[in-house]
View 1 (cartoon, one colour):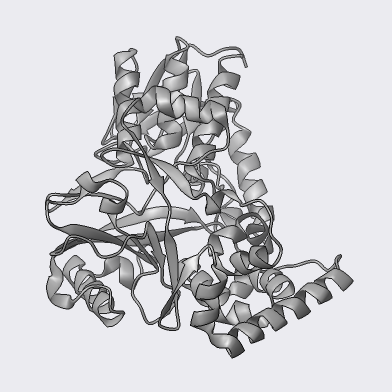
View 2: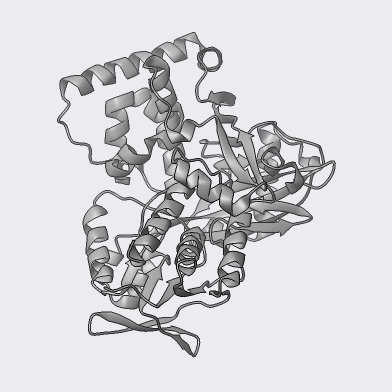
Length: 443
């Protein structure tokens, strides 16, 4: 299609705002419709009892110099460089991440470490002898590369805690792309066979002073200053199509029309609104979470940027301490924690009262020896829908069917983690949004 004069962007998260900003700076008339009361989507901030929180820790790291130029041009001096320190709690002990041999040996013990490494070596030999064997599930992928022992110790409990389904139902395609996020196994692999570190292992990353939401807020301000519109509280309830195009978008009783529509809404939602095949849509889903925010009556809990908790008996799977990213995020003399409790929208955890979830997390922190129960002086919780696209075994066919149906509308484009059903880091989300804007502008 020719260069559009007007573009309607559905969703005011990082992807939508970045695309809108790039288009507005190229003279395109843009309108962003955000369903929530504030912009930012998953990458926004909340204020709880005089403390600032992200919805889970969001870091920015890129090896693309153009993206660093983009970030610096947006935030200027309001950008902090943070040293990363992460640990994983397994069997009551904390393992450094990436793995440090002495720390791992001390925690596993000689016999335990020998068992893991021997099993790993056997798996590596078997994989080498049968390199063409195809992997269907995460269980297949991990056990062939790292062995059954490490799979049972770490990969299976953490993965099933995050995704809420058995590892045999998680696609190996996801594992091949994202296995570095699981941590310990890849760390052992790289300890045995030194190689370049993947992005997940970056020892330093960038973070906006004041929280990750500063990126979205700054983008929104720049869009408005350039003549664009950013409208919050505008949830799309209907999409009218005709002649293979989007004709209008309905929000309440108000209609919006544009030459081009860019959607960052969850793919399942845009698919439903545009009439994508229901059977294919039913095979796609998103994992949600409850973020539990606690105010702690002590200066600091740990020096970590992230802590991971695979054990199924603990409420939360991951936590971070905001003051370790930006000291200004916590009240003077106190600290805070954001705990991520994985769930599905509408399930028991999703419906649980905030005070009950706060109490359960505070009890668990006390049980693992991180924070005495009496030090938790306040807390709250926010439910976060559509946090991660779920890649079940067999998801690729339904995904391509839904994408084909939605993108058959000639003036509709998709981008973003939820919009395109891709599990991507912030830098890649922004990079793809910029590339889309340039394509739309005819560059």
